[in-house]
Image (cartoon, rainbow over all chains, first blue to last red):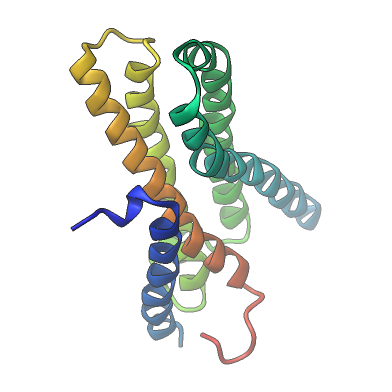
Length: 31
Length: 164
């Protein structure tokens, strides 16, 4: 499988996906 | 006085942060593509006069950004709670953790490997090729991490009610 970081598009999409994942985690931590 | 000092450190955090991330985006969105297309002579000139200067501003701006941010959080009495992701400070804390990982990437991986690529430390052609790949992936990782990092920095204290 190709590394998504090899393309700018893959890097940016990965960043948005990671944002969504981390948002769920942080939202669970905030009372 | 405290509010004035906080403003000073926030201002410094923004100025150095824009310098850091601006250069990160320049490396990833502009310079990489340019270096693939340029002549060998042009690449040699860039490696001698352009890339080292850009990397100098890049790595010191990264350190300054982290220090201004850490001092700002400490002045607000939130540094420990942020890094322990406690309560509402988990929002800025996630941004701070991502920024910290990015700073370690800059100094520990990108700069260490770029010194080999640029010929500042001795390296064989094979070591240079390996170092270039490592620096590239670390730089792309930081570009990816900058997206959630800026989201959490922007969201801290400014998120719509109920978002967190």
